[in-house]
Image 1 (cartoon, rainbow, N blue to C red):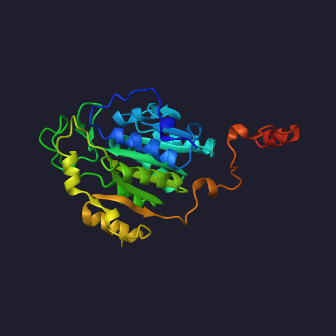
Image 2 (cartoon, rainbow, N blue to C red):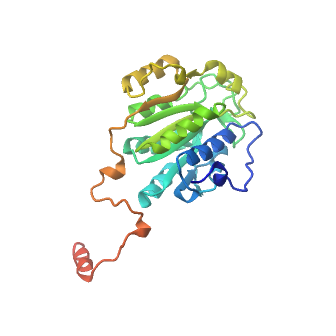
Image 3 (tube, rainbow, N blue to C red):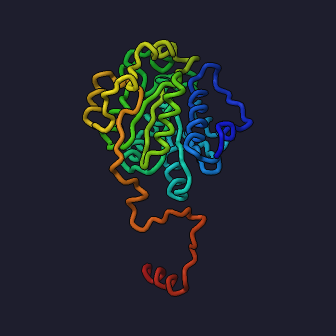
Length: 288
C-alpha cells in the first residue's frame, strides 16, 4: 500500500506562498494513500488557472487540459479505463464560468469520478479579475466600481442537477479536507467537492480570517442528515452556502458506467478487440 510520500514528485509548486492550493495538493495525496491507492491507479486531470497546475504536482497519471475542459477529458479517461481512480481539479472560473456546461452535465451523468474545485472567488492566474463566485459589489480590475452580478451558488446548483455527492471544505482544515476527498473517492458516482482556497495575492476580502469567521462546520452538527436532499438544500439557502462538511450523499443511484448495458469492467487496453471476418462483414453491411 502506497504512502503519502509516494504520491509526491520532485516538481516544486510555484503557487504564491500561503495559497490554499498547497493544502488541497497535500489532502489529495493523503486521501489517496488512505484509500489504499497506488500512484499507477490514479489519474489527475486539471484545467487552466493557478489550480490547473496541480496535475503536475502529484505522482500519478496527469493531464493539464485546456480552460474549462478538465471534466470532458476526465470522463473520457474513466470511460476508457474503469480501473483508474479519476480526479478532476480546477478553479471556480474554470468550473463555473467557461466550464459550467460541462459541470452540469457531468453531475447529472454521474460517472464514477471526483471533481475538486479550488474556490478563491477571483481569477488569480490572470492577475485578479472578478469570477462567477465573486460577491456583488466585489471590486477588481474587471469591476473597478464593484460587480453588479450575484455570486453563483454552486452547491445549490449541484443539488438541483441531481448530484449524488456534494461536499465543501476549507483549505485550512486539512483533516476534514482529507476525509472528504477520501469519501469522494470511495463514492460510487460523481462527487463534487468545493474547497474554499484563499488567494492571498489578489483577494484581500475572502481571506483565511474571513472564512474562519463565516464558515459553519457541519461536523459540529451531529443531528444533520446528509441523506436528506431537501434538508441539504434548505441548510445551504439558510447559510448562504457557507457550510463545510458532507452536505449530501445518495448511495442508491447507479453510476453511469454501471447503467450502460454490456459495458465491460476491464480497461479497453486489456480487452480483446479482435473480431472475426464474419462479424466484420456484418458490420460493413450495415452501412451499405
